[in-house]
Image (cartoon, rainbow, N blue to C red):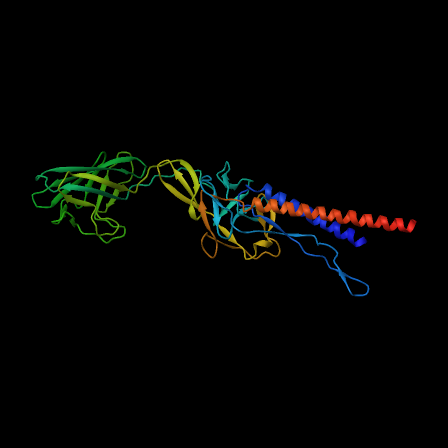
Length: 401
């Protein structure tokens, strides 16, 4: 009968742990990236009766726990510095002691030095180490190529002109207005052009030869250059009074297929429809965000953006052996496989969705059901103890009588 006490006590201990685990799961119902924890129960070794005809169990062994690695629901629009892994893998962060830690929680922030950190203060690791946002401004980029999309009036009289301005940037980041002026010649379908600038001297190499169009109004000459990058003419701007370097701007007349002209000659007003130049002025940082694929993108006030880092993803063959160390983070144990580290979406690693978070995979209905089961099991254990105690008292009373 004494075995009944120890058996029932093992039940109380096991179910108390079950209630603790369930309470922790419910507490982390809204924790990003949290993984539900389950208990594994197993019986203790049974004892055999003296005559060998029966075996009586000795209760339940202390339960073990394991994490459920199914994905939580994707929560989009969670903020610019958030990211979620869809599929297997973990973000890598650096603990305070320099150790590698792993997390599914992609809720990050920037510290005062521009380091990308977890909410608890660990450095987030990219492919080249901790990710830090540059504090310097974006330097200017001088214009080296441009395109102009427009139509020239096929019915215009000889000598008619059409001016197409475009803003370009010199090596100091100063903007200038470059104007290309087209003049209708006496030759059918032909226009010559000249280049001028608001400062300095501008010249177009092929302006005298001009443009010619075929009978359906598409560009005939000059033909596609076939160069990389493609250039049909080069416009130079020299003698800039601010001391900036002379400018040499490649001008491409054709679209990306290198067949379709950007310039047409059709009946109708001469008018521009689009233009592009690759220069940019100096600018300060305006925002930082995480894009799909785990790219950390710095955006500047002039509209330019740069990829300044990429989150790395670590994958494990046996993630069940990872040890939870708090703050939604895990550490490798002695039984954990070596991590497979690389970019998202490669080598079996999951993809990264920027601006989103992975929700907890805890199911509230299941947890409440578990609570009821643990409660009933605990009550049954206490009933065994009270029953065994009553029987013991009855036996003692028989001896006394």
